[in-house]
Length: 167
Image (cartoon, rainbow, N blue to C red; front, side, top):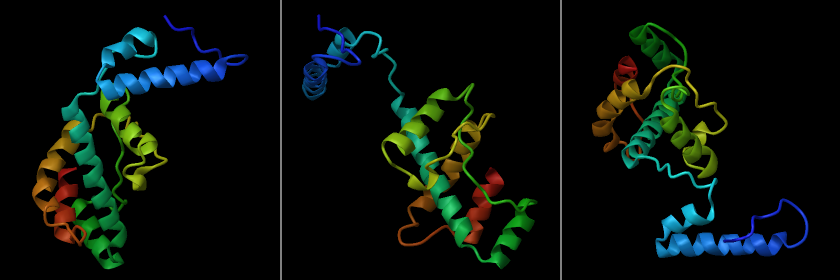
């Protein structure tokens, strides 16, 4: 069994390097079980559901397009959109419910704040304080066919309106 890494003091650098070596070898060799053995208390056995990761990526992608398209609308088109929606505030990704959608919230935060993806969303609190996953999932089903046509262009007013009416 390895010595625990001391937070200060003599020998810390060697212990850190030894720990990094074990982590590297475990990852490269596919020995993920070894991380559980060697890092008891750090590794907890939870793994994000790949379907949830995919959904969060799709949701963040969609909201990036929605927010960017809204920012680029003319004032006249913002007024048309506001009339269609019954409100005039700017659409913004609110996140996921911190009490009931914690895995989704954690995935979104990790993607944005640790992996530097979806940088337009950086610096936000991803806790919506209300359930959003089902609504966002329905919106992504509507967005998917639109997405294939968005190479080199943004969402148009009609597409934006359709998505936000679903919100």
